[in-house]
Amino acid sequence: MEKSFSPLPFLLLYLLFCLSLFHIKFVSAFGTVDGSEQWGYVQVRPKAHMFWWLYRSPQRVENASTPWPTVLWLQGGPGGSGVGIGNFQEIGPLDTSLKPRNSTWLQKADLLFVDNPVGTGYSFVEDEKLLVKTDWEAATDLLTLLKKLYNKNGSLQKSPLFIVSESYGGKFAVTLGLLVVKAIKAGRLKLKLGGVVLGDSWISPEDFVFSWGPLLLDVSRLGINDANRSNSVAETIRQQLVEGQYFEATITCQTLQSQIVRDSHGVDFYNFLRDVGSYPISGMAVALSEKIDMKKSYSMYLSSNASSLDLGSLMNGVIKEKLKIIPKNISWGGQFNSVFNALMNENMKPRINEVDELLSLGVNVTIYNGQLDLICATKGTEAWVQKLKWEGLEYFTTSGRYALYCDNDGSTKGYIQSYQNLRFYWILGAGHFVPLDQPCMALKMLGDITQSPAASSSYMKT
Image (cartoon, rainbow, N blue to C red; front, top):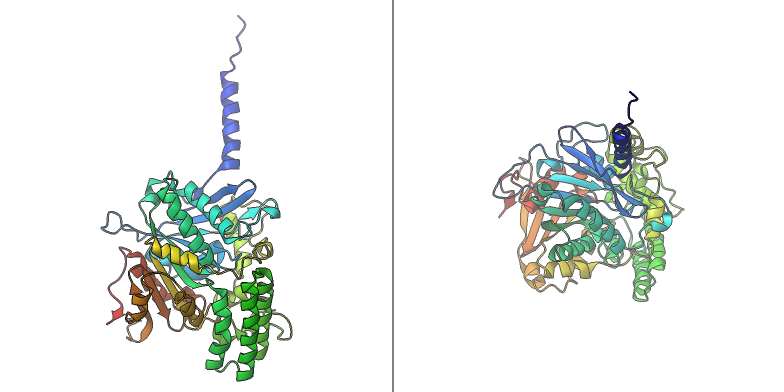
């Protein structure tokens, strides 16, 4: 008897084959076997792919009276990689030698790193016309990512999210914060927002450029004539901003930075106690007669504080191999210059109004600044805070500061001032990258901000 043909086995094989293709093309997350790490891509727009990496804390406390927090880290630049810089050089579980970091922020929270905007780090666009051109476009992409990660994840929804930023990331943080609040209210995002944290953030470029001359004069890095020249260029920038010439203001700002480097004989914009040309890294010295490349200087400062292993080599080597899902034609940081240039018209726009709106909506806003930072100097931060229209500003300004300490020697490490939903931390001995320069103080500050169940006892001096 002739055996009849059954299409079932063939259909099953075909179905499995199709599913495998579906998995490869559209997979949203990979991770470690124990679930302590997850990572993946979210297509935030057609042909625009954002990479994320989530770490679960081994110190996570479940069922505590205060829920375990999650920190979303937003790097600066724009175009700096949170997955690379923030993770391996500042607050992640491993340093660039892949050795455990004693001061990792995982001790207080779960950590979510993203390469934002698209084109940064491992994130990429298939057409550079898709790079974001405004802070709001970047925030919209981030909101899309959060919807993908949170809306169907009950575990994440239980953990309050703190948007923590550094440098230009502060502009992304306040715009994202507003979009998150509105999306939650509209029922489009299942997430509890714990607060927005602005670390040495580029919120008001005008106030920062006017702080550079006086600050460097006070600390003897500029003479009186040099400081006057700096103030004169800052006035030009102010006029350009009044006239809406934001691209031109960005170019003038770069010119001013170059002028200050020349006049100061090499002051570093990320720590005014240091010289740019003093780092023992090949090719790092800046020719004082040429325009300083602030994009390059950003990575130089971090590299000088890290191990000898080059971050780019690490990210394009063993880390890329571990992750497995990075396309072969994508190199970490390969689109960095394009990301920076796409936002040139946005660079000098202030975001003070967005901070005001967050405060008026009752969102917890924390500001922290490193004492030795120049690019986002504390003097400039204090100036833009006084421009807030928030009704609590007068009470905040007149409230007292409390000293902070960290080590057993009892010496003062910083100060805090707060009123209602606004806090300001002054971190002594730190430059632009506070977690790198003062890791103990940064970690204790994080525990205070998030009210982490793992937070230590009080570290204030009354």
